[in-house]
Image (cartoon, rainbow, N blue to C red; front, top):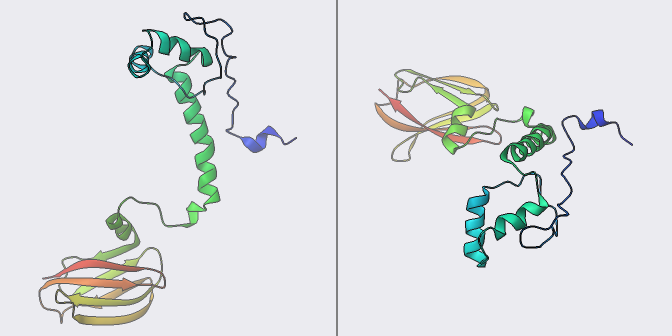
Length: 187
């Protein structure tokens, strides 16, 4: 048998045995409810009665048989414990510590991967990759014409933009596995 230390954070939830006393309608529990279940008996009973056409009180009386000590406090304690146990283990198994942070939204991911400054730029543009080495930087005008192409092998680069006319451009930053396109304004 393994030591409980290996399962730090995993706690047993001993649920009470289903009721052996029949409810007000003479029924006994058929199965035990889950420890995370809780509900407002009045609302639940109204839905149950409306859906099943049962007498008032039947839904709540029948459902409480399998989880006689249900409560929001008990349900939330169960959920918090399960999440507290699973989340750190999922983090380790997926090796998330060695990956780019998960960020919602494509623009946020690009913002986390590459810093491009100043923007608007005048004579110099700095590009810093936070994830991978930069292999090339290409700048396109709004007509799709390539106006600058620089091959590099570093995580950061300073590009002279003094030859570019004022206006809006698209910067295409490429590494081995990633291609990120960002807007650039030249003033």
